[in-house]
Length: 151
Image (cartoon, rainbow, N blue to C red; front, top):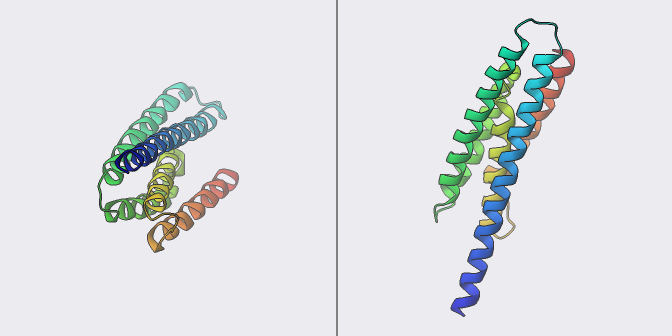
């Protein structure tokens, strides 16, 4: 009985680590692509410098976001992960005001990662916090899309 419990715990930990890596990479990649689109669509003579600054912002935001997500989801209590998913979603929504900084991409990815960890811990139940966070994430994505089109 102990071996099945430890193997299911190991499988859960492996899937969480895998999901975290995938979402961190996705948030980073989306932020980098968006930064490149912002930087290289104009004839600005400083476009490479602008891209490198935005790249730095995206990388630092991704590292900090996923360090927070990892710390919050590593605890036995689910409450820190719930708070983390909501806080990251609110920050992502607020960062749309400066959508060109690309902060929203890693923040949304981190919020989704924390929400999925909460769902996994609750054996498939989302709960109010993660559900609200996912709605805020969706709103942020729509607003970023509108800002990109209507700029």
